[in-house]
Length: 391
Figure 1 (cartoon, rainbow, N blue to C red):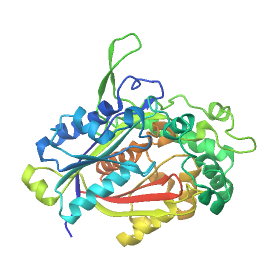
Figure 2 (cartoon, rainbow, N blue to C red):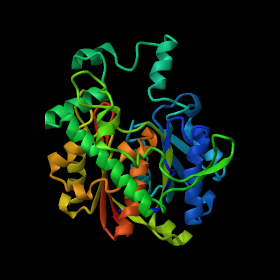
Figure 3 (cartoon, rainbow, N blue to C red):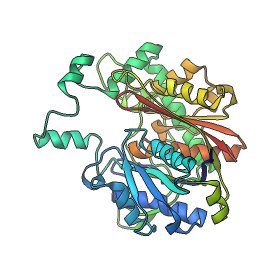
């Protein structure tokens, strides 16, 4: 079977809600990542066969086929097609899977995979809320689904709390994890570890001046356990807070996926090879535990064990998710989210899968590692996992 290679990978630095990226249209934000791939690889933009872009809240500025809007805002010619996909938080990681599968099948040679989510301009939950406000239908869950699961709705917050309770994690445990995420991200920024993956973007400052946004805005370099511990609980009697959960963030990320023939034809130097792919699904009520079976599935498909993986990226939707993943699989904390995760860096929903893969590709090469594994929990009980090999 033909191989699929990652020839370039770039992301914007995360922007806080109402922060530096708040004035940038989502289409333009996605275009920044795509244009960075063109610059870094030196490819002829017209040679791109397709663009696959993930986005969760496809309404307003992210409606009407946002992937196509991203292409039209970028330096790609209008002849390059695009498709927008939604696998919730796993959307852009799924975009990478689809791109790799297209290349492995031999039907395409050069595909851009990525995602964008502007959570300031298109707040989380907007599609459901706006439809409800307009009196359109009864919402995404039919009565048949509610009857089957005995719930009025599915909640990621409920799922995160259920996982914390199942694995015996206290608030103090999760707050300590959150503090470590900020500390690791702070250390990475100070060491310049993100320099190769982040593409700078010029934005308007508070006084109208032009500033360069090239540093993840949500990282709290002065975070303390006392400060994290002072944040109120999301639910009385629970242990989840906004401080031990991922941040609302604006951002985009993209990866250039190519065939071996494209490597030769365009004189490209590969960064990594896509080694194995997996998606799984389970209980939609608990919802967020699927990175565990997804990891087991992708390791089985690759014929590998966890010990053979040099680095892990496990999306920090809530602290309980990577903590449960580590506990269930007996994974090494020192190899997991080495530069922090979504608690510090942010979770721009439809862009997060491409973000963690971009970080993984660059950090593997920076450290001289070989294999990396990325996995994410996905709303309504799905999981996704990818193994890449640095080359």
